[in-house]
Amino acid sequence: MPSSWADLYLYMDAHGDVVDDATNTVRFTISGPGSIAGTSDGNPASHIPNQAHYSKAFYGRCMVLIRAGKRPGSITVTAHSKGLPAAQIVVRTRARRR
Image 1 (cartoon, helix red, strand yellow):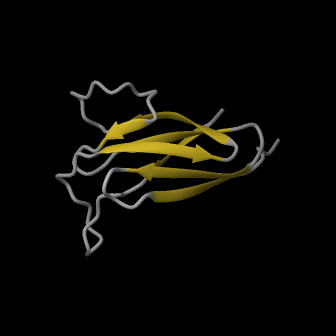
Image 2: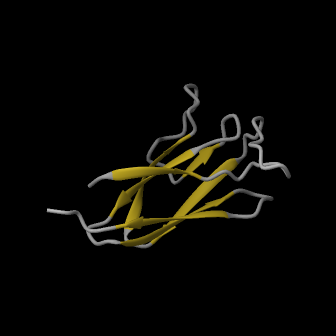
């Protein structure tokens, strides 16, 4: 199954700039015909497993990899972090051409 990634920026200031010193824990949930393949923050010293459904922001960023299911549809990924509003992204998948 192919995977794709989506960056959800929770840590942005009033001007839309990423807050580079944010280190909050981010928990991911997913709905629709897909699953979380893994997460990462890019920190080489991180001990968080890549298969976890959470990550810790590193320089204000973290990443979630999405695995598409067998049927097409809309996959909604939501990122939650304490004290911040949730961020969402919708990934639309389609049937593979043969």
